[in-house]
Image (cartoon, rainbow, N blue to C red; front, side, top):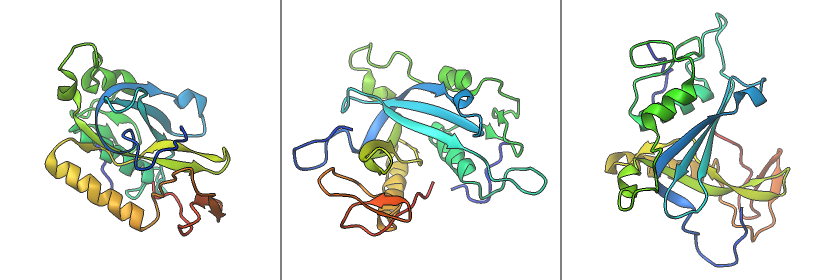
Length: 216
């Protein structure tokens, strides 16, 4: 049985306002890439590519990290990486996921040897953009993306929120509420490239915001 834990739950711009490629987006999932071999110290590094007509570039979401584990080596129910996986599986409307050992399984509890091949086969819109008037039908997912300041690089980059939702009215409202909470609690700080960032405790925020840290 897929383990769900204890909680199931860029470019600089000179114009004003939020660019159309930032904020909430209705998108299609077009590709999943496994970069885990390049990061042997992590349990996984999967990159998900989402697209829509608001950006010529894909929105990249990285599902990466290491599971927190119990003394018996089972995944902790409070593991941050597990929560990200649960968000993703809910958005895909998929009953699979990872078991308590951290191995990928399908909805019938069968092991998945190559998770990227499986996800690309069952959930991506491989022909997205090649057939006119069909693109909106592929916009099955709802994401939030913002400019997040990277202290090491000294600039901000478009970042996709770790909670991804189905593109339905109820799920969209749930994601919007979640993002509002993340903003209020300074887990999401939108950087507009006009203010000099302030660094506190190793994490950057804008000059008008208090110190922040990453939630997930």
